[in-house]
Image 1 (spheres, rainbow over the protein chains, first blue to last red):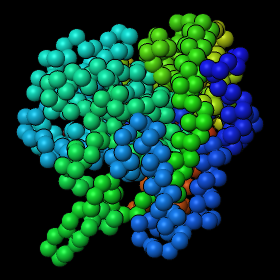
Image 2: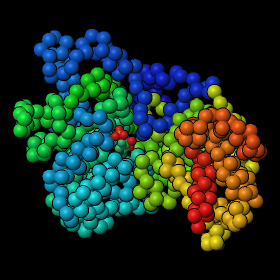
Image 3: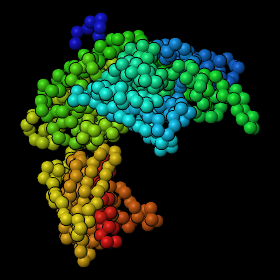
Image 4: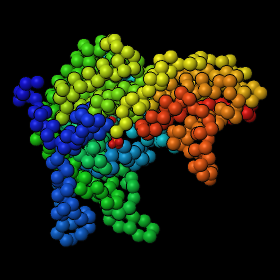
Length: 419
Length: 158
Ligand SMILES: Cc1ncc(COP(=O)(O)O)c(C=O)c1O
């Protein structure tokens, strides 16, 4: 691909990711599983090391120099991540351990205060278990009703009866981008409709924030969760943004140190935002590392990241269907403009486990599973799929390697015919 | 590092492409047992006709990866016509080969499992030995055997 101002210099980017130099089975590593977790650039690793080597101490406690420095750097990372998603104030950004915990926070804290028997939560048929099970738990506990938004033949949400579906709904929960289909959902349109009928909107943006320029104000949502490890950051950091009034009206989630102003033997006073929701010692170096990941992505430019992935997804869809014809069935929107770089597929009836096992021999990492979306798998009528997903460090050569290895897989299991 | 040929032996691919004892049996009189691997969505149904302490017939349906399907096919061929005791010994020996020594949990030494492995002729089944080098696939290989064990229990209490 020619370098234009709109595209990334992937050859240079690959050099920033030390793991891409690792040899697997005697060949190069072709990492196509970023939807599961992304790899980390040297910059992020260096920053975390530097924290441990020079300024590590617990935060919000010590009055000595390195503790103050660690606190300042962690809070600077919070401000950076908040700015990255267009959040008006850093205190509206809460850290937890992953997006799963953040959605549980909303279900537990906001949900238990505001949802009662018969209240409806509207979800989509393409949610990750992280945005299903907390609501099923609340259903068991509270008797709330769950309602589901289905999708059409092009894997786009069917919004034709959205207004009826919203009747009685207190909260709409949807992923901004499906981790299986790649579908980019019309968050703003759904948020407007939800607000018009008095519902709040929770967005699972785990697959969205890493790949798209994000502005929570423009998206017009109420709760917005994402996870640092898919964003070039380390594991152990989840993020939740919500408007301050909403968060202030919610009871704390986990209780313990950091989240109080006073504790007596007969009660406690929770502290102010965001620490009210951050009980216990946070992952300090990791939060600072996430800040470094945001720096790295901003340096690339999120518009260029999106454009690169749109082009590479288009290339992948074209290459795979031209080469493998009916042998490959891709579950996801056809137009690369409607989707991100997550490509779920079945190949010539060969079980996804077997496909990924043979791909592994060629150093190609794809995910073969139900992708933590079993209701979606049932809806698609499959037990599992293979999923290849791309990020800033992938290029056409990675897609070609996948395509060649698929042909080899077919030969291996079914004999010599290409189709 | 283990290679693909350790996992996908020719005989495994043969059972995958041409599964033996595929189909259903009327239940009852047969036992019908479902097995499920939540990790990868593999499903298996084992039909088992047991009378006078003997496995008279076995049929298999279901869907899944080559390892789970070929293991089920080999399992059906191995236990058909065997006594229930022989079938149980095969199950133990097979799981022993998969490094699952249940006897250890019950306080017996490793020797018992090793001896069993020697006594029971695993035949074709030994082709599945390579699976041990691919830990995530062990569950695929043992799915049909666990389902068979359940079926034998069910037949015993019927
Ligand atoms: C859409 C979506 N939601 C939630 C999650 C869960 O993320 P985590 O395991 O970091 O909580 C994932 C990824 O696994 C995801 O893709």
